[in-house]
Length: 145
Image (tube, rainbow, N blue to C red; front, top):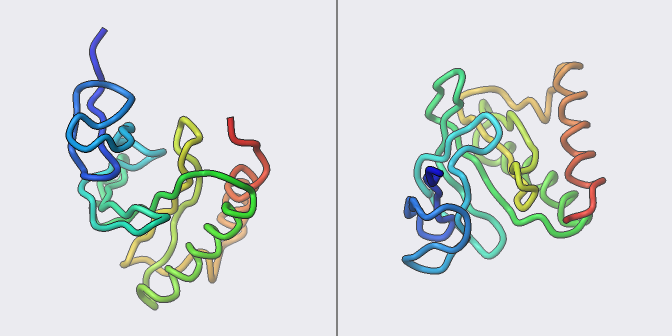
């Protein structure tokens, strides 16, 4: 069995050791692929969130930013959605949040921000409203395993 390359969320180290803890600093290792995005390099973090530069796997857009936060409670998920909206407003009047959801293992919530596209959360199309409502329902509605 071949080990998948994993990424440390704390230091950004890429490891071939598979899921678990980072051999450098003991941080959480996860797949560098989150939904339709590849995590490229760590930009920053605070007590609750981690921000990476990212690229869309299908469109090869490499100017995206993805913010991750450990999934805990429904309240935390609702706060995270509000944080995504506030980030979209404050980061760029022309930019926008493209996507929100959960990592494949359900451990982390994420939102993807594109500084060059208009804010879909503030001016969503009908199709995008439905997708966002589904993502929020997924974040808020399911119990953490």
